[in-house]
Image (tube, rainbow, N blue to C red; front, side):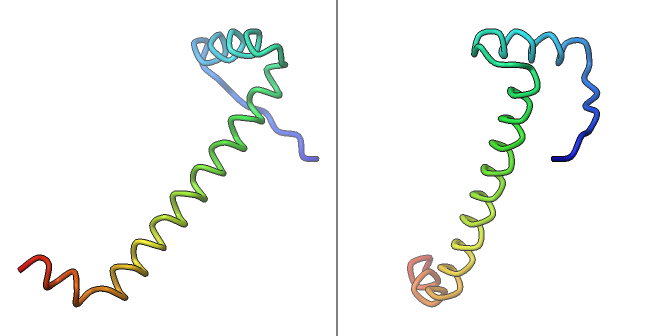
Length: 68
């Protein structure tokens, strides 16, 4: 496991603390969950974009005809 320092504004830290308390977890665990969610969401967005390009390429002729 790698250690790192996370610098937050006072407002971000207060919001993180409040959310962590509501969830019954530490601020560290809340931040780790946020990182995992961010990475998963980004990876999903990348897969959707790749699929859209593939579909557009494969069906370019049909899409062009539909636009006429």
